Length: 468
Image (cartoon, rainbow, N blue to C red):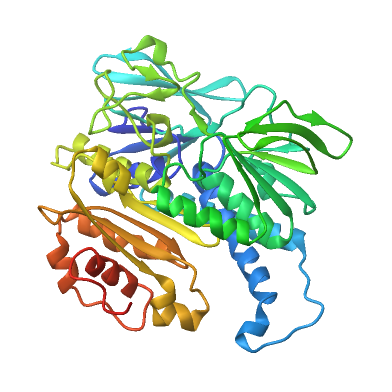
């Protein structure tokens, strides 16, 4: 086997393995180095297994709302180990699928940790070690770093795997905690809060900012808070969580906020306070690669300051999304192959939170659009006025659109409600294709679907909605 490749990819997550597959499609010889499991955090401990858990929790919720749909059932219960086992099984299945795709594409895989080890002429050398021993040294003029990120640890809030959980422990509980504190209200924190509340836990969310889901439009953030509190969650914003005091099987803390100080005792704590890039032990100190607050600095084509070294996905900074990593992987490889890809525009990347109700958005919020100097036209349409939503019993939600009043450009779209994570792509296509309100208004939306709310929210920004 040759030790020289057209491309070496370090990391087999959603950015790395997609980059490797695309490079193979373009005729490159490719090596990929992964130290644990293909699919990365996303497939093994993030996107996929959490959606399996959330699906189970949604079913649990529906089973306790059967009367609404004309059904009745007695002694409804759940088996938590089976729920967890199903989630883990799905992750394993998907991981096996990726390994099969890489093999089919004739990508050479290495099991171990990779580190840049200088140059051999025009090529970068990459040393691969396993259990502390070097197993190979490979070379390529092009190296993509796709090493991902891990959960941030804050002093006094460190995870311990038993009482204070990170994402992995939160996905594999041996038993359901009766009382749960979630620190952080980004997508990860909110999804775990939603899962455990749906399953019956008493959930408290503590967020240091003045509102939850700070990345979302404030109006959507407020609607989400109202929905979660209606479900029984307790939400504390502007919260400063004191050091966690661990007992035998519970955790106590003090939370300060503008509304006062509370002493709280719970069974478990989930810390979801951001992520840090995996930039350690990559050999970056021997290169011109620049790192800012644990994230590698890149340009619009994922190039670092070191010729031939690229970085994609979470290790290259926000937004920390699997689909952003995958798109960067393709963009990066096509640039290496001499094609003419377009740089990725961050405002065209959709964000999704798979809670109950779901939240999805793309582009600028109304607040940021105005701050950017736009004169805006805003449209809103509620789910309660949509026939399909009423038929499904999913009337909680709304769609909000933000347009430039002069040009008709769609500046942003913000959604909360059932299945909005499936619908947001319509607005993403509109932004990517630079459509205006005219094309969206003339688009025929199928009836009856919840997607009709997207059409109505566009009409609402201009001539007015038809059904409210």
